[in-house]
Image 1 (cartoon, rainbow, N blue to C red):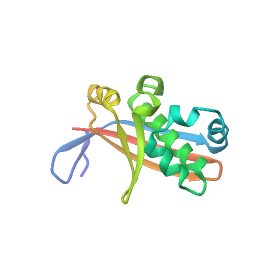
Image 2 (tube, rainbow, N blue to C red):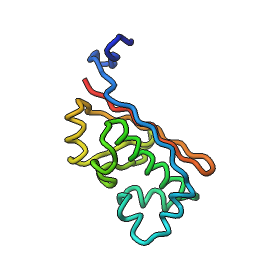
Image 3 (cartoon, rainbow, N blue to C red):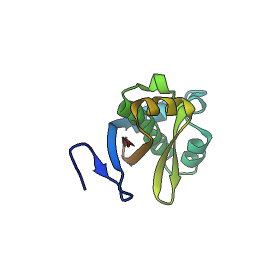
Length: 137
């Protein structure tokens, strides 16, 4: 059920969209970056490294994770430099990808009034895309 201010959750509380971010990432660009010494370790968490390395086309998965970090920063209007690349990461669950963040990012979310993040990832060929929606009461 929608109203002018937000929407009602199944529990009955009003939820507000606090931000929406989207990012498109070139797989070939990320692939070239992956060849640089130290890039993976500076940008991706252990969880992201383990997941992508275990996949057939690892650069696509790295590009999707990178796009999610950028989309998160855009959704909050902060910019990735303020948040930090390793302070936000993607983990895959049986229900799909989930966005996690550390205390540094949590501080910015609280300032915005957001306490939840929804993420959708997709990749095909040379492109990976991520959409992030930040939500709060």
